[in-house]
Length: 402
Ligand code: AMP
Image (tube, rainbow, N blue to C red; front, side, top):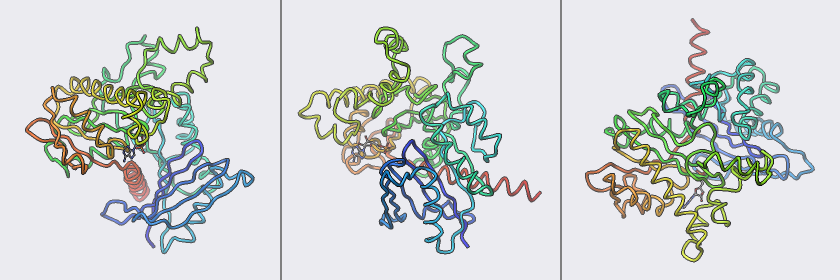
């Protein structure tokens, strides 16, 4: 019997999953990955083999009231039918916010759930959806170990100063500070840097996680020293639909002068801004690139995105005291040749220089010359969750055995 881990990433109407074989002494090995979309409405399930081959799919209509609980139960029975000598040992969950309390992954119990619920006000749009499958599994499969893995935890290595806002002290005591996100992605990049460039693993590196959500992280010897996201996942770079950093005065203007409710203001900043808001066309970089030659608004949205990335990299170079390498990752970072070229062109002052041919084939090394190196490294947040879940499980079993 091969023990397996199930990794879950739950959103408001979606549930992404990956299933990993756990073979002693090797990395968790991906077997299947899939997705439930349109939960609570017209839901759709698709699952692929690790090789990319489609294995199965199914749809439900809104009459079936197929939500997160039904999806989880469907997944369990799908796994039972296809398990081929495998046995689920634990679930690892992506949880956006671990607050000040959780500086690493944690085995879930009732006290942990209470602590995670107390963090909902810090991430009201994401945390409740992340917690829902944890509660469902606790109710429907009470003996199944579950591990919560946090997007914030990787940034606990930052100094107090790097994590502060210049607000009155009592605000910090309420937990109002910079947390930073995308930590599972940065953890993965830090873990594989030595395989690409051993010099960088010990050096000053900026990782650009450029996807629908986007942020930058400054790594010194593999540890986070600064990042562009702060208290919430709104801060820093413009994103697909999120605004990135705006003057807090804009929010007062929206509430006081425009008479928006806090919910309407929040909706605008999270879902109607960024590439979508500026272009008025789409949050999808592929679409904007296709239109940029003929549409000024598409071009302006991309130009602002690249300008903000370049400026924020300048700020992180100051936080690091120099730069040895720049890593591009996530959907845009891994695939958009033009964004990489434009960002590197904007950093020629820092000694970066592009190898155009390598860039066209995604390198992985895309820099030339003797300045800082630039690499394209695909991220793998689910593998980090699988690794963390296994290590918590191992530690728990060792404690029980002693
Ligand atoms: P992610 O959130 O990491 O899945 O990234 C999503 C973003 O990556 C979207 O803006 C996509 O348009 C962008 N993306 C994915 N593939 C490509 C591609 N081949 N070229 C340009 N952008 C891409």
